[in-house]
Picture 1 (cartoon, helix red, strand yellow):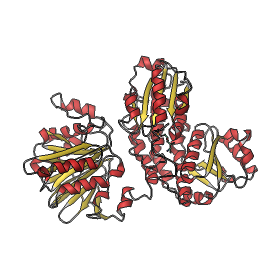
Picture 2: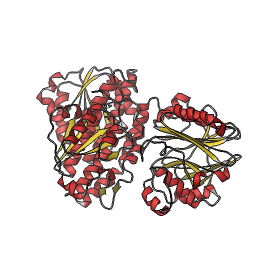
Picture 3: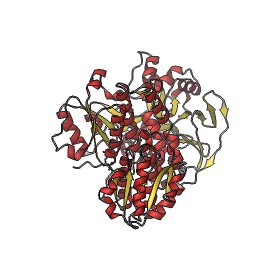
Picture 4: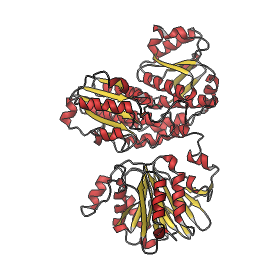
Length: 610
Ligand code: AGP
């Protein structure tokens, strides 16, 4: 996720900006820059790579940068445009007189470019620079007004800070979907994406809400809504210490990232579907309708958690588009002389975009003439660059080794691709619309679980001393069980396996005992009765049973007292909801066992070796 820092006051601004960016490094980024206001100009310094690179370049420009007291800074997590200095923020307009930093996604940046006309010379590939030029178009001397007018035309998310050379002692900031915090010092103001960069200067903060604009000058601060009505806001005291602030107050990155899911899920789907058409539009597919209709086989290449997202994606593709779909473990695919050809569409699915097995497998698929596309989180990563198109999942940096939000966002993008192919074939408009209506409700249903996590903590405490267990699920809940089982293994070191519910009686049931519990996903769907029978078989063997059941399913209590209730949703979308329950369950078991949750033993975040 991009990071923003701003300052206006009497201190030297450069060290505040650079140190502030260091405090935001945990957010993940690939380039950084600052801009400071001098009497007659704005000086900008940008680099790709780490903040250390920026600090070195700032030193080389110290003469130009000295005695400056107003400025903005940014660490970029690329979403549009590759990792280059030209794409690095701050971006400028009006021949360098107007400077902007932006966190978020301007969905309609192409339309805005048309609105701005052909005369604008763009220096970057980014949507953010378009926003800078849009504000510049409306600038007639009042910076806050220009920002207000420009934001009326913007669709998407933003956290922005803007400055103009004419008003060297003024910062205007605005928030829609990407957080911004104002810090109150002694005759000075701080701005940042979160409180972390300002904690060493002040703990008095004001959180901007969506749709708010703040106009900060040396001796005044005013907040407005987008109708230009002035607002009264509370100033709060931050209780976090620095280290906690990096995790937004959560104890671990994994817990923070589990809680990120409702928001980043929206980032994954935003601007990528059309409710009226009951369809999805993923530009990165780069295939003509004729090429799309020629596809008779979809192959999903991945490893680990990504492969379980792929298994859900298989169900989606086959159910919605009726296209035979295979999930291939990348490390196997590359050595099996795979049967793929020009009628095969291969997706390489990867959070890091650097997994060696997945990379090698996609190269093999390309060699065999398949269409190869990426479903990746890290912009500009090797897999993203070596596929002939694809879609970024916009999960933001995932820093915990155990993948959570990337998993749900991979499934979100797979769903949209399945819908797009389905609607290009036989899926009716009404079916597409009905699914999209429910898709938009997924974040609120994820929040239901996040807001009721105390019961999950209690069950985790009860479970944590078992040494072995099974996860069971049927239909799309089988890959959910696989992922739940992997999460538990990864961060608690408890031995766990996952099976389709119907498989228990074919052998695994031999291991059940009072010391061998089962976590069964028994939500209300077409397979409920079958799953219930499996649970009864398990109980008959005296094994403890922990259930994931649908809110309102009172019959579940006849089978177990240990139940995580989840909201009902469409069968095809259940993985988005049920997974959150299992992520929290594994997290709290790991906490109960005092494990190193974010850095589990033996594991790496990105497996770049074979
Ligand atoms: C997930 O919790 C694991 N850390 C691991 O299975 C991971 O999903 C796998 O290594 C694939 O990584 P990728 O998505 O970056 O390709």
